[in-house]
Image 1 (tube, rainbow, N blue to C red):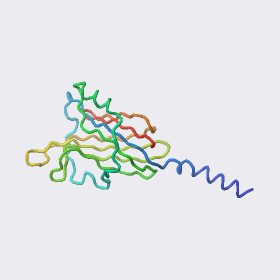
Image 2: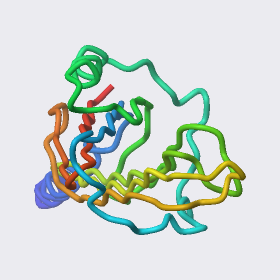
Image 3: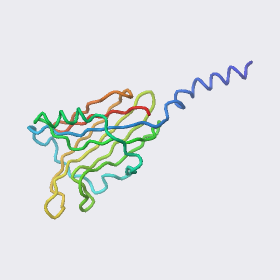
Image 4: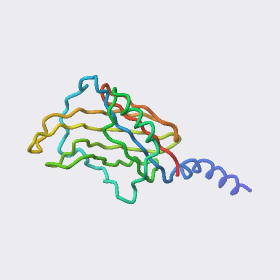
Length: 174
């Protein structure tokens, strides 16, 4: 009987962590407010994707927030810079994914960044994006940076604001 109580106590202590791990769909919309000047002018570093894994083709998913992205673009006030979705295994250990859009030139993309996710009772998100301006030769001229961290409930659409750049993100269990 004593063994049974000890085993039950151990299961109760470790069960929330065990059930938290799993496969999730992550969808983001990175957009800019067109009438606002760039909030920052921090050049994108050479190793912007260091420690992050690139998305495999099989991890990419179709987007579900298309109506919202279309409304943002149609407003004339906002411009969607990046809209993508993928599936990812999440656990208490943070995992970082590198995202980019446009043609790579000398290690940089017009849009590049990372999203780090860790799952416990809530999901911890750390988003770090650069919107780059490249000259005709592909040399980085200037960058606008968006860096935000937050803790969210799964399945909720979350807004992360950083002046002229903003991010909508949704993390849902599959």
